[in-house]
Image (cartoon, rainbow, N blue to C red; front, side):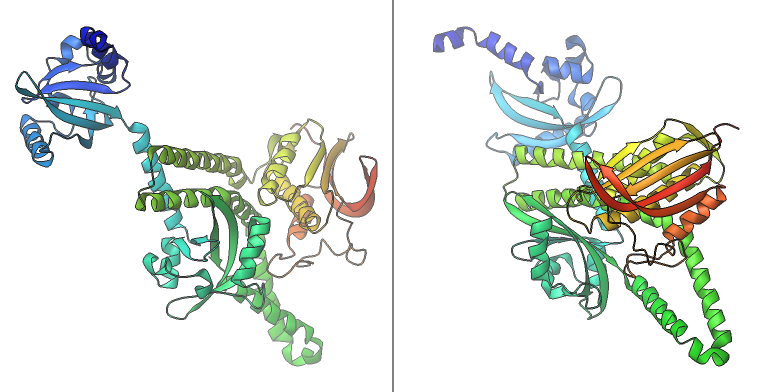
Length: 526
């Protein structure tokens, strides 16, 4: 076998160089290119005859002069006196002038008593791009106005905190990474009295969770927050990603609202003395609610986007943090790095797709336009699913394929309001959950019916649900303007909206639920 190798060494080396997926160069100490394999020729765009007339500085965009090359050789020799390999990252320049990043491994060897340099160059464009993407998403995380933490589920220690968290709490990242989350967070008595041990137990059961609590800064300042939690397993360990939003302003508004409600209850007792003051308070309150109503739809959709983004952002944060920890412990090899970067890239693509899905909803459109009814209803279902992906709510549709000429986004807002209310009731129920949407029309009107099996609406409030500010939800969860605005929007479209309780038959079973009916003038073309 040794004789065979010795007799055919040139052929073996030639085949190896030709088949290599790296660019291979042989250089002399003067920087002349003596040999380049097929991969090198293809990557640079030269012929074999052309490349042997070049020098290193004709190819390397950084070492672009003879002086720089000679300096680099001198440094290489001083750095590697035992002729060991030298690895560096640089940029190579193609024949057409375009440059691309490469990782170059070089080693000096003696041939016939002279020093020659073998260099293996690998195109690292993808790696550089991935690194830039990771840096971009770290910038996004750090620029978030929300406080973001990654917490070790077992030890409760903070593994990562973004710049917003460090700034608002007054700690450095190094200080926070030595701190248990329970040392800086306590439950909020008025909203969600759950301490950290119970939170961690509950998140293990449900994977996602929303809690209310209070962070205490280094200076002793209390910051009330609403926190969305997500549990992720990475290399056999569980981590919790916590995205916390300061709700001081919201609580202040709720407090003022409660205060105003108290004043209204005492209105009759002090009618003569307080009449002018109460009128002013009512005007101010009405003005606040009108402004809130203008932002209600956009706020709901932004919250949907936030819920849609939290899981992939959590995954990106955990993956990147894990790779940092592995790197610090010298455990990060190429396979783990590639796998982690691929996972991050998948989450990034998902984020990009989500933005495209939601973007059109925010486009202002005060004019009537022509649109497809089936498409609008499907969009309302898709957008509303963002916050309820784990709740197993089934949608059943029977929609006529027709074009309408009216206000598309306004109709979409009404559908989202009704579907959201139905879902808020369904998630409280056990067993099968579904929403049925069907349409029909006659010569004059289009009818859209949205039904659910949530048990119907209490008969004592059925006649009040379209009133302004009327809500059965907790103060922090509802404003009571969704259905009121829906009624006004449908009225603006020259239509009517109504609701009733009815028995709904589905899959040979009968359920009690609410049925909303939207009645619109049937105008296909104008």
